[in-house]
Image (tube, rainbow, N blue to C red; front, side, top):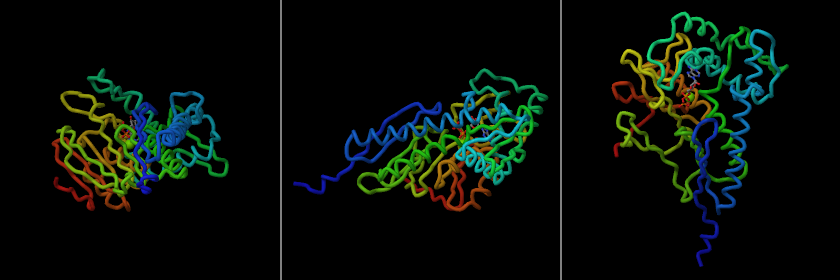
Length: 316
Ligand code: ADP
Ligand code: MG
């Protein structure tokens, strides 16, 4: 009679398409029914956030802010206000490499392969003039957000998935789930341990050689996010551009093909992965090395791997 097995827990996983991405929700639980109840709660939370931050749903709080750009401040929920406030702070620490108002320029690039020439320079210039995280006016007492220029837009493409993953995780922890993984298309957010008590580990793949994991890590940082979706890019005059845009020039960044950030929160990791991608190897690592509990592995377009100070690559 293995009394100790009475409390044995196992891993359960469900997959969904949420926020336009493949999400995989994994929890440690005693049985399938318990796991499904937990996972359903997490799924609802992600769907709720998707509605809050969506720019395609014209009734979302986010759309309302964008529709009233250059017109008037919009009162929003504390949750969205706080998210915008944090996004503005991240924009600041990355000197605008991540910019919550980048969306004005996003519209002129198509990353579905249909584009083979640069958009018109004047068009790029005009849209860049609508970008500026420091112009966003936040009033905490009134809980309002104001975009002072017509045509200015905020968007959460580079931070929303991370935020949703953090919230889903918090919710599951609050329900007493002792361990799990929120995997949003490869952006990983973990807590606790595996059922046998061992830490979660993650393998990093070099996009130049996808078959081979070049390093395994124990996840002490909880969140690991990679930017540089090598499937999403455009080629102009033989040069490869990613779907991450430098908000200061309006031109997609090049030079780095993959940027992985380790941090305690997925939200920060998500935004920093995008920012570092734009900043490039030198400035990117310089920033990461100054942030506590944050690490990076970058792969440049020659396939060379660069890492922040505290990353030790285990040979395996
Ligand atoms: P992934 O596509 O893997 O989620 P990211 O997390 O880096 O990659 O997010 C990319 C998305 O972020 C883009 O599709 C776009 O919506 C938005 N974005 C692109 N460049 C920037 C930028 N410099 N600052 C803020 N958001 C950006
Ligand atoms: Mg990102």
